[in-house]
Image (tube, rainbow over all chains, first blue to last red; front, side):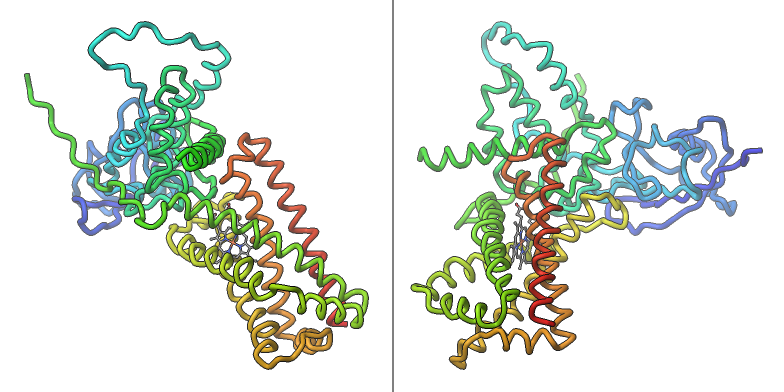
Length: 249
Length: 221
Ligand code: HEM
């Protein structure tokens, strides 16, 4: 018969900058249980494995189907989504840690606002706001839509930069997801109008030059986005832009 | 209407670019120098030393010719020493800034990423030893480098080991660097092209290592 309980080790931290500690929990095993469900059990009955009362473990989650990107954490040493991490497939005790490339808010929740700040820095959107109607954009071929769809699935979960050796909590590298977003919008027929602005930002401080091809990102991405293809493609675009800009000056 | 809560300022903002040279150009120049002239010289250097297999007389004649090439010191400084020092200075920065995580994520490319850094440091130590003993000291004493001199060194076991580890490390660094170069310059973009480039790198590593072993055997026997 299958085991009736699950053992969990969770890294606890009360507040940003507070000291961290480990707590163990012994939970009832239910069929097809995922990590989110395990955390919900702790929330209902916050008692450690040795019977001491504790505070409920804090984490973030939303969609529970691997499209929102909010439940990223380090599970048994690997960064991934907690919703798609099934307890039956994990070695015990299952260790849960917050991602270390971002400041910890509390327990397993981290502050990923740097990712959004970097998307803003790279102008990773299509600007359409203005004082008059711009009319419809150019048509895209179905073929273009199909391959760009793969780039568009990014959910800003932070896993690609968590596994990246060159992305640390105290540097300003923009990371794989952001480089991929530049490619997504630079290959969009309307987005391409602002192509050079994005490329100029991408070769600025903390830009694409900080990537040294460890390629963990593409292995870890839960959405299987071809991140390393995007990085190489953007390297080509940025280099061409840099040389032209310099020669034309 | 409820006031929307203000987003906190991002913890990390972009630094100002370096005043004397853009970081982007520093990194691209470092990458380019690894191939031209440093990598090109590595291949030329191994090829020249393959002449050791033809015997001491042929070897000494060629070294003698090379030592009398015009503008030699100029070429050495501007084509070798300065590019290597620049590549290494930026290289040491690149070696010590990442948070290496091969034990946590032991994926193939991540291991190469780690080895690229390790062999960069090995190359630095080895090249420093190599240049001091076979260029600086003979140069200062006004003596010539000969087959016999190299042989007397390589017959000492610890120097032999240093040469094998140092030179094979440097060859790895160059060969794997070709792969990384192809991505930094947007040459190999797709997954298939990147994989093909990895095979090219592996091929370069094997061929140059065989050449090296052949040279060492010529001296050590
Ligand atoms: C014979 C000497 C050397 C040769 C032929 C050589 C060649 C190369 C090449 C071809 C690259 C690839 C560039 C790229 O990734 O775009 C490279 C990268 C690198 N080299 Fe060297 N190098 C040498 C010495 C050194 C030394 C002494 C260091 C000092 C630590 C060093 C550190 C590095 C580092 C850290 C990288 C990685 C750059 C990156 O991934 O972006 N190299 N080297």
